[in-house]
Image 1 (cartoon, rainbow, N blue to C red):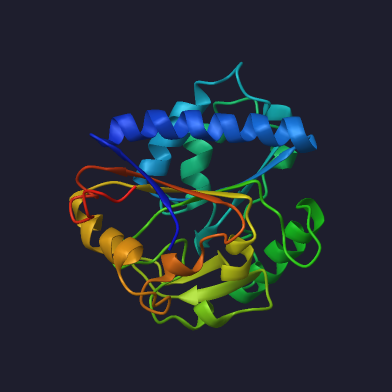
Image 2: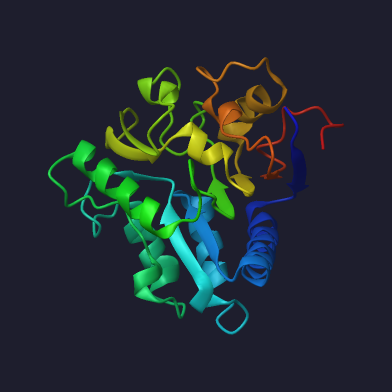
Length: 246
């Protein structure tokens, strides 16, 4: 696997660097194509990133950025476990973002399958691309079990090769989820992984240095072969990586 890995002493330093990377990617995309389409991740490290980005009130082309979600738990959008609710509190409510440019998974649909279908229809309306959407930047995390977005080891969703969006039933505390599919992720122009904490050390080492086995290590499957992929990791998460990996 080809990956650029940058290590930081602690999560705070990682988040500061990640905010600069995201800001640069947004400005570059808007400068080249007139707009930026960004896929957001859930989790505590992304939460800190979103808070940091909200401080760039005058420094980002907010009017030209569209925001999407890589996955969502099947809960109401105001539920504490909702990725949307987290990003709303940390970023959307604090930055000058046009509300029409926030495209969330419609968890008020009849069921997860209906929500996945409606979300895919929204993506096809708002994201450039022909066969697959062309996101400018995708933010990703890594679970201690090796999952990323809501693509879990051994889940049937890993085999989905036609739909842009699918459902999964895995993970806790909410098993029902909606997630983008592997081909959508692999067509991104840029991907940024944020990984912190000792609990992620085994999964990070297995993903980056272990044999390729996407059914056990889904993060290996989502890397864009033609795009840029950057891993920002703290020392605790990188503890089991070879010292020469970069």
